[in-house]
Image 1 (tube, rainbow, N blue to C red):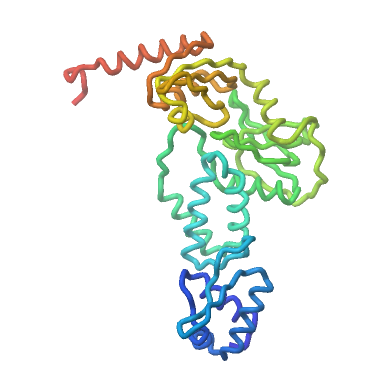
Image 2 (tube, rainbow, N blue to C red; image 1 turned 180 degrees about the vertical axis):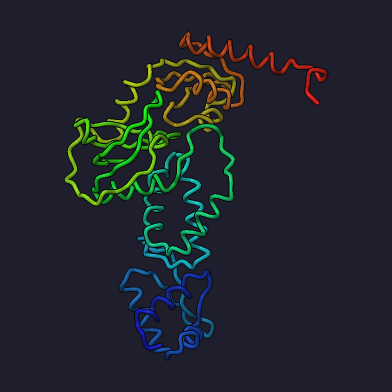
Length: 327
């Protein structure tokens, strides 16, 4: 194999398998001399790939963890598996890794051959995720188109459905994607309204990057997350929440979204959460119930009233006798 770039890629592909390769075996695989293998190993090291060599009769080469993440070579099956996994995760906001997942998906789909892109789409269309009902499902393509436009500072056109069902067409300068832990939002400058806007991504349809570049404007205040938080505060009523749990604080904190804060221990098996929330009453009640322990809502009164009504409905549903059941 005389093509050096192709030989280096083949060598790297072999080294990415979790084993140690004797130099003689690599030379035989690539049909070159052991001396050429040593030179190629040095080239890979110069490119940032941490290749470790061991001496002795059974010594050889292997790729190890380094200080930085070098590019990886993926075969067809690996690329499809990663793309499907990223698409499934990106469709639901996953706290802590959401933005990185979308960036990785956008990069991967940009270089996927069309045959693999079709396989990814076919696999996703044939599967149904078991969702927890804690956020709107989003088409992964919508996220990747928006993410690419944000990265490339490229104007974006899309259809948008407002909360009351009104359909409009928008052209924007996309600034940043923001995840709240259960929903995705786009912070952008709306060219038609000549003002900054936030858009729920699950209400966006048919996004198209126009190809027109722009110079990013400065947000009116803070970063995108702060701007998003202020926008949500204007859209949702502010709830001062006070809830006691009959469970240790570490048990409760593991089952609540981090943005609700950390409960304070009030005893060996109890804790109390005092926080501010802009969530709907329905969502907040659901999250408290999913903690899966006894709890008492002290405030706000709207929450206690809603929990009383919800509890009464659930009690009536559970009171159904076998004779009442259909079939």
